[in-house]
Length: 273
Image (cartoon, rainbow, N blue to C red):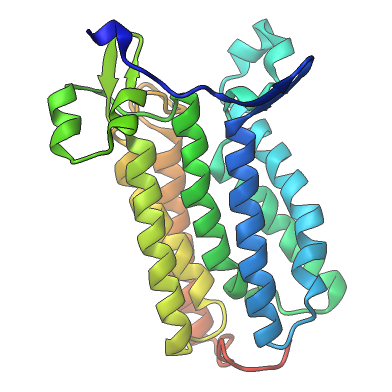
């Protein structure tokens, strides 16, 4: 019977008043794996191994705060009525676009103070970012959020999904599109593409800008399937508007930097400037 469908527990560990949720564990795992990859690659590219460790110590807390602030801002009416929920990030509600804005601003300031090329750091970190996003979406899966519209169990089984995913998409008596999975797979493909593009030796900055464009395309279309989108108006989803803007900005920067000769250095060049 549908009402007896087994589902996964959101709680990873509980001891007295201490509760650790899978949401945080999964996001943290993605961040740590991304950091490990970036540190390894930065050493190959001639940067001190501590650069990314020091950057992450600033970027992750700021990204979490900006991701939450972004989400709260666009649902301000709800959080004004429920102020105790503003910091309840274990329940979900971290907007990736908000986190990216915070992380990028932090990286710009950090690299300027260290006298390091921002574009070199961004290129090295791009595969780590998209891998972290791919893993992080499974936190949404555990929370049964960031899903799409209503579907049937037959539809989900027709995708040849493991039973535990099909069962977890059964929410309050209804099956939903696993949009978390669509985006996770899109990001994994993007991760592989970025690793391959490293060997092409693109001009500096273009690996990161490719990441922005790839992610934006996928997010635009997948967002159209979701039912929990932050809305700018009744017809405009904020994430889709931001995705279009980021794609155009990244493409424009790529062209501008080539035309102006600002990207003559290559990814595999060993200098930091």
